[in-house]
Image (cartoon, rainbow, N blue to C red):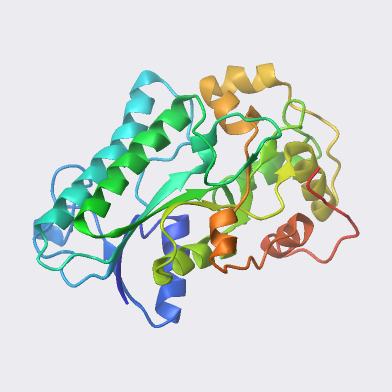
Length: 305
């Protein structure tokens, strides 16, 4: 399959590109920059003519990082435009193509569900409230417009992606390594997590299985609360986790983003993927953390409580 990827140099894009190439697929990295210098688009207003011709699938991973700093009004606009404008541009470009891609896989997020306590959330659950939920609803609506062009659309609602070097995990690991880590707030909030390995496996599965369409939760089948996650991480690192971080401290640091990214509870489960036949390789938290952090087997039991 000939597959174009935006955001191909990011954490997920790099790993996905490597996996797809290893599987015999041809990967086209949709690069930004001036057309005169080989750039293929600017993610807002233009795509180079012919850039996507002959492509059978497009994976859209481009977008400003949700977790970088406070959500000021200006930052929120960057987060929205980097997702909505780029997705809209791609779909409009598809409409002009003589041979359109068969599948459009667009990044999304479990932020769609908002703060839902202990409620189990599969892809049939209603949207939640908050900035992230509003953003995801608009984002997925832009991607879904490609369906009118006869293109299969998949919205990949990813959880927290675990990688040793990038993303959220290094930020979680640092205070624990220094012996000052602990749960965030009450620790009762559910954290949908997935290893980078399973993230890219799930994306490849969605690309290559015609039965997969619409919203798809990409999160391990056994979710964990923040308390359980923190405890498991401490045991894998052989470090204590005795210093809980009060909600007020998080809100002082990150404002509104603290409530939606760190303190909200989203018990998302991957029903659509599992029904389609996908099997997670990293389904159990302790073993997943040990593998990602390249640690020897530790004696711990980390369930989903």
